[in-house]
Image 1 (cartoon, rainbow, N blue to C red):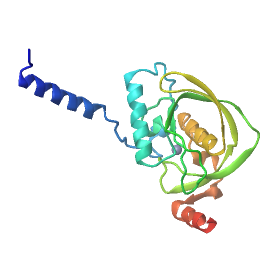
Image 2 (image 1 turned 90 degrees about the vertical axis):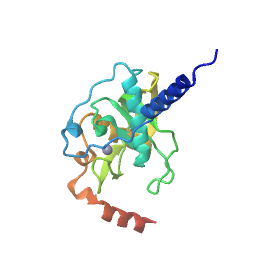
Image 3 (image 1 turned 90 degrees about the horizontal axis):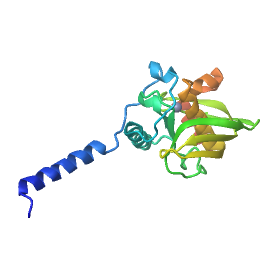
Image 4 (image 1 turned 180 degrees about the horizontal axis):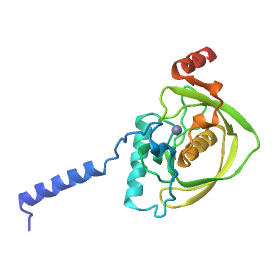
Length: 198
Ligand SMILES: [Zn+2]
């Protein structure tokens, strides 16, 4: 028996509404000064929870939209231990490894090398400011992906830097906290320095 046409239209509309609702959203980014940026975050217990999965999708969409190399949950007002790392070649790091935006859940550093290197960082929550930040060059880390699978990995240089910057966000720390005051500059001066380096 054929379905009555009204039913088909109804199903079609329902499908469209569902698609729009499920589409990843670009989220507002909290700026330094909002208390969420300084808040400690909570472990994620149920990674497969619909809300966690939706947050991962929205964080990835937001990171891509702003062309960041990483973003942490507190930056979108969610005090949860989750961030996205998205290393990709950019004018500052033309040799940066190319990777898919990756959700790292309940991340931690297992070990770190002694060697520390200072390099420039910026932050979506602190626009217009750059600073030289000392970070460990090599780290060994553990995190769960969005399916709950646990990974142990070694990261170096740029990816290790992103990981440390984002992990700090989960503990209410921003990159300026780790910089010497004389190593903090404006975006305009940073762009001048970068153009002279070429
Ligand atoms: Zn940041």
